[in-house]
Length: 384
Image 1 (cartoon, rainbow, N blue to C red):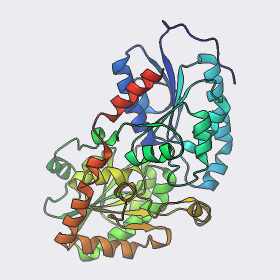
Image 2 (image 1 turned 180 degrees about the vertical axis):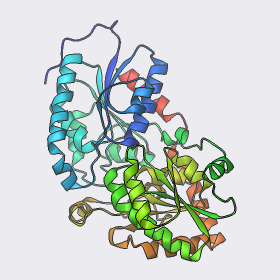
Image 3 (image 1 turned 90 degrees about the vertical axis):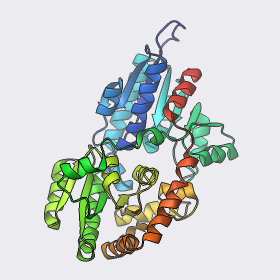
Image 4 (image 1 turned 180 degrees about the horizontal axis):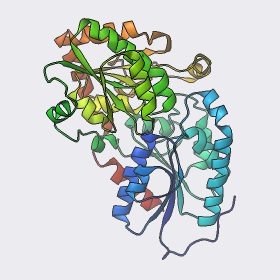
């Protein structure tokens, strides 16, 4: 593709940011805020939702419904992705931005990078997890991505080994993962007892994940309730409708409180968490809350996906630690009784709980320094 005529040096800078999921948009919004602090005149076009709008971006396509879970979900939404790709390419031709910034969402973004074919500088923030699966994508990154910014120190080493210079800025979650209220305030708001064991459930940020994983977590909670005098909260994603949570919880016949959009407050009141694989595992680790990972996908998707994974763990906490400090209950092992037994044993063993907390405490210092989004914004503006 060919963009428009080159802009003069006096023209306002303009970037286009593309993300496709809630976790990526959280970081994209932080980046936009920092870009605008450093250059108040910069214009930001985006694929996102209210998070990016509130950060000051002009959102021209809403990401709701874009997230996918597994190959067959990708195939089902293929027409939507093809239509979106045409829209983005048309937007680039019309606006001629100074750069396109990709945020995670690698299945779509790397294909788009090929289509752009270096006509506009491509910058990757929250880089594809090529170190975990599908390492063949390295060739695409090397050919079509001008600048890559990574969150984990080991990612910089990985890319360097493949002849790619990556800038490590640390993890933006260090600035984000903070409760918004005292523990007692949320307990009072929810009418929960301060002296009871509190268990928080984090079933994911995608509709498909919640529908598949929340029932497993609720069954685990029911088993836990048979042994412990426990109370339960579910952290609701802003991206998933209330009807899904209400229906699943009603069918479980458990007394469960739902808290929307306050994951760190849910972690703060919890003695133990059940967490879906993804960013939430790292967030829970930063909060130093004992937890276990629960994940399950469709059987055929699992058969296609599992051979591509090159690491022994899928939880970011374990990947960063380089060993299993958090128990992972994946696919066939995502058995409610086994999950409940593990949680109960941990909660009844103060030494075990403290050992988990001590291991989690070692993760935070390895994530770099605070103000990662600010560092990334400076790199991007320098690149422009």
